[in-house]
Image (cartoon, rainbow, N blue to C red):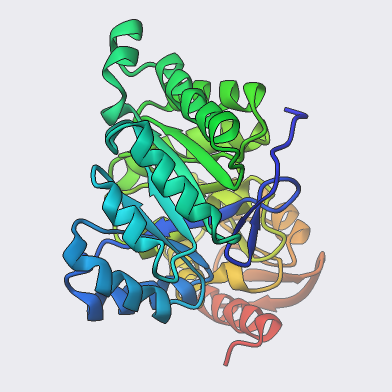
Length: 359
Ligand code: SF4
């Protein structure tokens, strides 16, 4: 889609317009365990994610929210449902974003109170987080359920309210469902109707393989149509896994001009040796090193002398297994021949470490 979003400010981070899509996550620790919550946000920060959300459930957690916002070097977003006083209280802390679902916050006047207070701080953004699980009754009735159209109507209703009634523009929206098709439909329609930045994602996608596939399928379409300003991969999994998948989606969609890429063949009857094990070992090392933090590097681990050399030659570093032998490639040329698969693989790992200056 040609139409781009407008730019908003979330603390020192610019979102929307030509700014790169920003990966976000949400901590799983409740604020009642502030020590653990602080540890978790710092793990997220160290993985290279500067925007993180925390749920706040009651007024009694406001002090912990303030402590967390003071502690986190990036932008903390308070995630609020039902009680608008939590949003007002959060705006007295150093949080840089408030996520509300206006449909469950108790009416327009309460939303107005939140927005008027947020307006006083120029770098605080709001997210209108519309969710299929908590749509307004009249909209559910009109569409007979939480369809993509229903998500769009709710989102645009509140977008209009923010812009036309409250003259507030420093906000983004999300319209999420656990259905890939309905979420995609909603995001595309919202972008067509408005320049408000979109926080994308497939909510409650699940865990493991299914969650990763649903998130990847939805995000790939949305990235392709250029409608992602920020996104979260919502998995029933620790934040680390969400972020690893998120960075992989960015890399796969060509939205990350850095990081490693592993090319490994699916194996077949021609495969020599332990290709599965080598590819798996390399993947684990990449994750341990947090591959997205390093300069671009394509590494190929291939199983035979038929298609292997072509792919290995095309990579920055590669190896192709033979019958008890292995060819090792760098920048398109064979630079070494090994008579042991293991030695070739260890040499390849060392070469990656050297290129990335990993000790
Ligand atoms: S590279 Fe060789 S071993 Fe691997 S799948 Fe292709 S033909 Fe089979």
